[in-house]
Image (tube, rainbow, N blue to C red; front, side):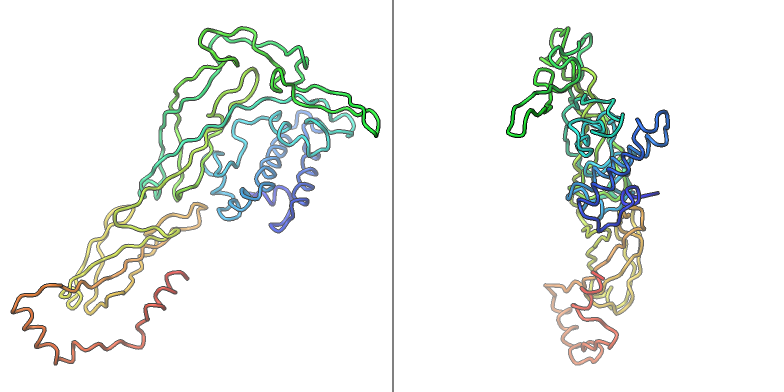
Length: 376
């Protein structure tokens, strides 16, 4: 699967001007007016616009570089951080990026006959934002969440008509006298808000734009490996727009709740295991919790406090699909704080026993070496 850099034909180190130049070249190559009836060209046009939408924004670009293409665009086009065009169509792309061709609207200013779309644009409804809380187990396996969202929709029976101020173009032109002569500028129509339509029949209960608030249950597919503060976009599930506009998006902020026993560090998990002195001396087995259930692990006789047992593949899955982290079990030998008389006498008698003298082996790692290994 080609990533955004491949789509635009640039390297990861490309500058902002190089990204813009590459997008303009691709957009001209695959423009629908230049390739009438060519579905492949239209799809490539949309892909180029999606790539530019992400790579031209420094924050989105950084998030994309960190997460990778598959993770950023996972969830059926519901990209994290705003990636993907979801419910947007061709007119929305022209509206958002029309200025990249040097004109005031979505057409190709000064480029032969590729200006047929004029300056008309389709208004997009307002995005909505919600926060969804997950358990660590849900984040590890992925989950479908159904949430109730109050969003604005066009009222039943509402009708719209062409705006008489802009004649449906969505923009109005003005002639200004300047020191360089008479110049024409275009701006969104302030009567229709750029939609080219105004309300004709407003049903009872609708607002000035012909919209009413309605509660809807939205299904959100959350992929495995998500972390807190990531954002998932569900295209077209924000507020609807009046007239022939397109719906906004539903932005879902992810919150992974703290776990009682497991601590997350990237894709790795940490677990504190406490063992008694007898178990540490004689060896035993212990049952520990993972995000996918419980497992039983052996504790070797003579294990030392601070030993880290690595359970490979028992951590969190990588969001970009590249493997699974590990579960690091930190062994802590529990020293009793209170002893009875017989217990004290036993340990007093062991003071002269060489078996109880500290004797670290050359292969035993220091605390700092263990910390280094954890982050390597």
